[in-house]
Amino acid sequence: MSTDTADSASAAPITPRSGRIAKRGKGGKGPRYARTGYLFVAPFMIAFTAMFLVPLAYAAWFSFFREQMIGGNVFVGFDNYTRAFSDPQLMAGLGRVALFFLIQVPLMMALALFFALALDSALLRLARTVRLAIFMPYAVPSVVAALMWGFLYGPDFGPIAQLADKIGATAPDFLGNLMLGSIANIVTWEFTGYNMILLYAALRAIPTELYEAAAVDGAGPWRTAWSIKIPLLRPALVLCMVFSVIGSFQLFNEPSIMRTLAPNVIVADYTPNLYAYNLAFVGQEYNYAAAVSFVLGFVIMAGSYLFMLATNRRSRS
Amino acid sequence: MSATPVKPRKARPKRSTILTIGMLAAAAYFLLPLFWLVVASTKTTGDLFSTFGLWFAGENNLFTNIGNTFTADDGAFGQWLGNSLLYAVASALGGTFLAALGGYGFAKYRFKGNRAMFMGVLGAMAVPSTALAIPTYLLFSQAGLTDTPWAIILPSMASHPFGLYFMRIYADSAVPDELIESGRIDGAGDFRIFFQVTGRLLTPAIATIMLFMLVQTWNNYFLPLIMLNDPALYPVTVGLANWQGQAASSGGASGDYIPLVVTGSLISIFPLIVAFLFLQRYWTTGLVSGSVKQ
Image (cartoon, rainbow over the protein chains, first blue to last red):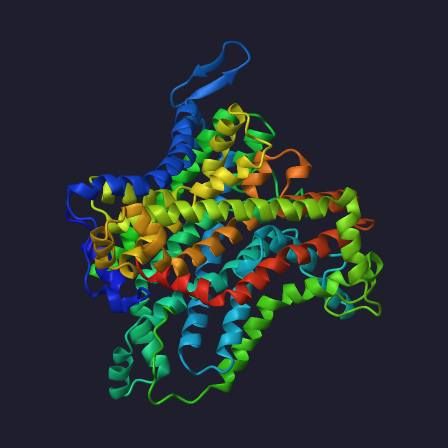
């Protein structure tokens, strides 16, 4: 097997105990130990099959049927999928999360990148405190984050409304026409720190010699950041972007909590996930819900794949 | 075991005051809602509406609020906390054990399908977890497992491929092959070698993964929302969302549930914040090792 020389090579420099990495290769060489290898990975693979592959296969099979008053479960082929692709409610939801992705993700990534570069620049005082403060929201459940911001946005005792009241202005309608932006703010608050830490970690792995060479050439910290650090961050940035594609299109927790505050703004099909959830657990349309989930999964995989393809091509050229 | 190589930097540039002020302002934005939560937890419902949100009212009502939170609905909140703890600890222990064994196996043994299986698991990271939740619910409901703790623990244990990925990379570099060889020469079986010798070298990675699985399960909302009907089994996230629903439907203005939601939120994030502060070196390692390679 021509295993993994590529990824282990890239793994080497930053792995813990990198001192020991000099020698590598598989411990149990030869067929004698292959059986032991299977035994080691078997528990995980069994659990993974049961909790991941089986549900996935089941959903795929399930999405080809329809529950009917007469005749029970009937095989309908791709009917659920044709319905999904021409379902205005699903399309509206997809459009909404796509818009969300286009607005929120670039903003969040720009902030995370800026923060990571600032932390790495040695220009900053109190860097540790700042790093911890920005990362802290990651420890907060998204439900609690949405609850808190919901109160902060609120017209009754939200501090923003109170301040606006004091100066005789009207607070923006956070829970009305600005809802998508309000949710974007919550998600940005939750995940900027996480992305910042990922990027910061990647920055720490860049060999210092590069900076020294740049300094010899007379580059200041800003120039170094722009010309050396950002290009070298590309793999980490792509990883963060792919996580963000997955996260944005799966948006559920935040709108689902905000729905209790603004049921007329956040309708049942606000995001594809909310729609699938309501189809399954309110409308009992399990088959169609499975198809909708699959369409969503397909969109996410296609999106991530296209994204990686595009960035790969650009880095090669 | 810090994975961040400390870089000695010669010729430190001068610190920038403007950048420091800007970053402190950013930090303030990220801490503001948490500060608001602490302040709001000290207020009565009346004070919440009549005093400025970002500063304390005259009297401190925090302990009354905490008391009310734990006694409301016949002590439901304490039960939710207990459930969250059970789900998180069980999933993290089980999941970490599976990931450690599996990651070690993938890193240290050659067998047919090693790479194919590993790549398959990695590819699964792209599948939306919520797309998985509905079929999992249907399967569990056929097996009669919905509305039991297993409905949360079993899926949470196995559905974090990241743990396996991280373990494999870590084991690859942290466990020298010679150590396995010398164990074999001493006549020990491979599992005994793992549990008594080489597994110990994975401790930092095990701690990292356990922390992340704890947090992920503690914070999970979608899975328990669909799997559980019985409020006595709710984790704290679903419980709080439920109280919030009642606070909102009782008209907002009257809601006795509002201080409960606020104080309950504060109590529910407290253990996580403490864990992140005290285990800083672990999660930093975890993210460092996970981010750079793909």
